[in-house]
Length: 535
Image 1: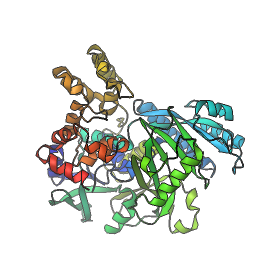
Image 2: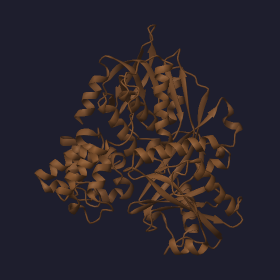
Image 3: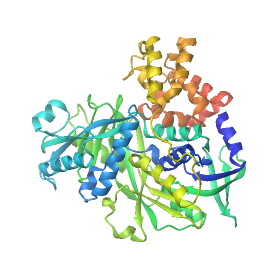
Image 4: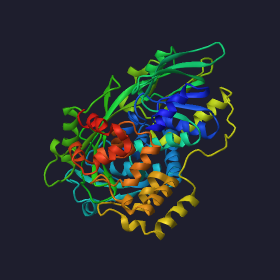
C-alpha cells in the first residue's frame, strides 16, 4: 500500500497538464496515452480502478454484429477494426473465440438472412478472423449436445474476441502502464469539484476516502471520465454538454461449467434479445439482461435471476435445471448509453448503441468522455491525445510513441527461454487450464522475469497460495508492490477473477487466504479480511 500513500502525497505537489477523474476504461486509456506521450498526468478514482461499469462487462471484445440490424455500418466497421487491433497488440490477453448462434424457428429474421449478415460482418472486419460457418441441427447436436434444438432450424458460427483474464484486470494494466510513464494515480480518492482561475488553472478539491486527508490538485485541463457519473460531475463543476446518458442494466450469473468447449453459445432470449453462455475457465457466465434504469447504482434482483435462469433452462438440455443454488457469483453493471440533447425519451432505447462521444470545452478547460466500451478503448485514447494537443495546445513531446500493446516480443522470448531452462511449466498446478509460463507472462508482462528470480531463490514461491485458485505465492508479493491493492475486494474481484469463480464462503475457508492478506496488507491483514467477509 506504500505506492498509493506516496502517490497521494504527490498529487498536491506541483501543477499537472491533465487531471483525469475516473479510473474506468476511458480514464485508464486516456492516462496511458497522455503519460506515454509526455504529458504530466494525474488520475484519481473515488473507488478502485475499474471498480464500477468496467468490471461488469461480458468480457468480450465485440465488434457489434447486432448493430447491422440498425444499419450502423460505420460503427460496426470502427468496432471491428478496434477488435482486430486489440487481438494484434494483446495476443496473450485478447483472443479470437467462436460464437455459435442457434436460430429459432419463426424468428423475425430467417437463418439465411442472419448467416448473410455474419458474412457481411466478416467482410466489414477485413476478413481478420476465421470466416462464418453454417451449422445444421445435426452438427450442433454433435458439437454442443446440451443445446435444446426442439424449436430450432439450425444455426451458424462466427468470430469475435474475449479477454482471457477479467475485464477489470485489462483496465488496470492501462493504469499501471500510465504510472510507468510518470502518471501519478491513486484509487479511493474522490473529488468534490473545483474552480478555474483567471490564468486557466483548475484547482480541484480531493479527499482520500481511506485516510480522510483533503488537498487540492492543480491542472491546466480536466478530463471527466467518470463513466455513468459524467453528467453528475459536470453539474458539480457547472459544465454542460450536448450529449447525455441514459442507463441500461445488464446482469450475468456465474455457474458451474456447462460446456466443455471454448465457444460462446448465443441465443435469442424468450423476448427476442441476445443471450450468451460464455466460457470462463472452470465456470460459465450466462446472461444478460438489458433493462432500462434511472439510477447509476443497481443490484441484481430476484426478477433478474429468474429471467436468466428461465432462459438458460429453456435453451439448454441440462441434467437438472439451474436454480439460485447453482449461482457462484453475480455481475451487475449499468451501461451508460449516449443520447444527444433532450432526445432520450424520443428514441428506441433498445436500439441505442454503445458508441462514445468526446466533448471538448476549450473555454472551460474540460473534456468529457461519454459512453464507450472496452472494444473501442484504443480509439478513445488516441482521440483524447489528439484533442489535448490540437484543441488545448498542451505539448506532447513524444506524440508518436505507441502507448498500447504487450511488452516487446524480445522480452517475451527471453522470459519464455528462461522459463523453459528452469522447467517452470512442470510446476503448473494440476487444477490449472494453462501452463504457468503463459499465465505469468499474460498477467505481468516483462515483470514476470522478477517472478522467475523469486522462484529460483525459493521453489515454494511457485506454489499456489490460495487453494482453488491459480495465484502463486510470488505473484501476490508482486501484486502487493505494484498494483495499489487497497482492499481485499481489489485483489479478489479486479486484479484477479477469484471472486467470480469461487463463492465467498469457499474463499473464506481457503487455506492461504490469510497469508495472502498478510502479504498484501501487513499489519492491517485481519482488518481487511473482516472488512471483506463481514460486509
